Image (tube, rainbow, N blue to C red):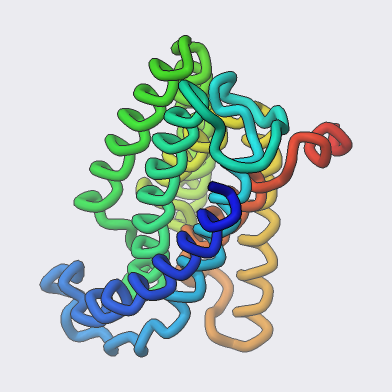
Length: 250
């Protein structure tokens, strides 16, 4: 199955990304006070980003042992029996979350906001999907660890948001807090090393992103930045790094 699964997922997401990009151009997610903002571009980057991120997640899932909820490497390909079903459920769940994150990234870059009407259902899909994967795998411990990781990441970003607000800045909003909980829960399935690497990578990428925009004079000090996309890319890094690489970092 591994011989055709990866190219099938990549091709499907690349083709499916075209209507997604067109839907995002309708900016139906904007609030009334955001209607006068300049319209975004064609969102040409959506199909390739979906294909790349989906391909990396597929590669990661089919090379891991999801029954344990951590990144223990096994033979490539979707396994037989119970582990095969766990991998299938986990893969479909992560691909759905990834699709939502790409849409949220486009919205964040447009209006600097992560709409709840996409965020909350995505959190529900991840929670139910990981629960089902845990039940199929014979234990709920990975699911519990994932929820705990999401809770801790959300609390950490809530503290950052309150600190930012106390300083008179809205650099980190409640949307970023909810996104941190979502990404932390997804990373928590693969283990705490993935959580630490993914969250830390998001912070580093956010700083680099802000620095680049400042150099290009796209923003000013104290201006609003779309912090969601760097967080998502950092989480992807933490999710796709193999266990042996993660072990070498700690």
